[in-house]
Length: 83
Image 1 (cartoon, rainbow, N blue to C red):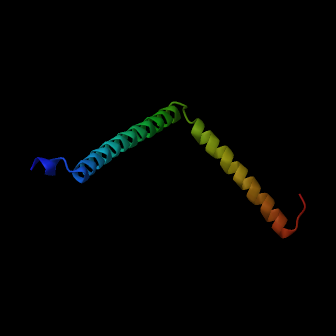
Image 2 (image 1 turned 90 degrees about the vertical axis):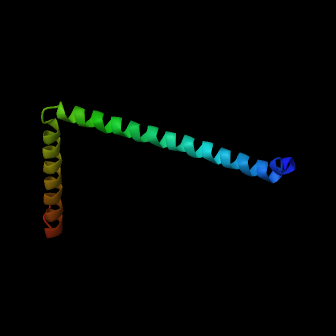
């Protein structure tokens, strides 16, 4: 009976299982930490965006105007008009 408990295969198997559980637990903890970090980054970005009093809207308008200018230039090129 005692020889069965000290069988090398059983010892290696149980040590491997314990090692796998430790690795899985540490990876899960690291994943949760990474998710918490990303949540904090999103919260900071939202808080910063809300505190700027519409500067995000101004940036969007500038980008929209830039896109319209590019489209106007491409249409001019397509129709053969020199700018």
